[in-house]
Length: 145
Image 1 (tube, rainbow, N blue to C red):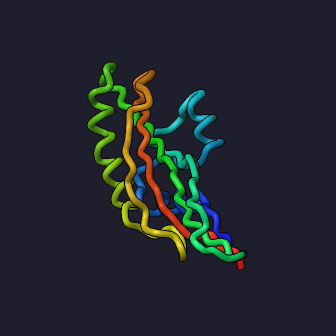
Image 2 (tube, helix red, strand yellow):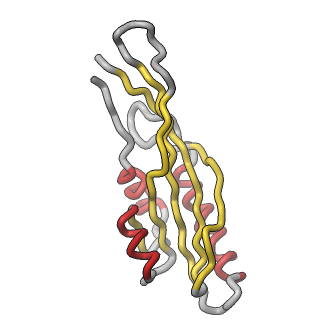
């Protein structure tokens, strides 16, 4: 069986190298801890979001499925100069641009399609921390031998 599953560590490693302005970088467990009390900003967290496979494209015992993987990059920025969050929004734009530059069109591993942007949204603004989520997708084939 040829199963190359998506590893969110690929994304974390890419962002650590490509976006040095991030002071904190992690995965789902780190995000949960940060949501309870963020210690450093700007921060980004890579969260696996969903996978969806198409039916097998062969009519034989060989199984070949095209699998689309969705993952999210949650960004947290904080700007203490402004209680309303306007300054945090202006800090967010260059950070999102750096993340987009690092990921959009990048191929995370052999056999995976280049990463595509899937949309973004505001998660919340609390305690002068602005939380934003961008979603991305990549796809690959899963084949039996």
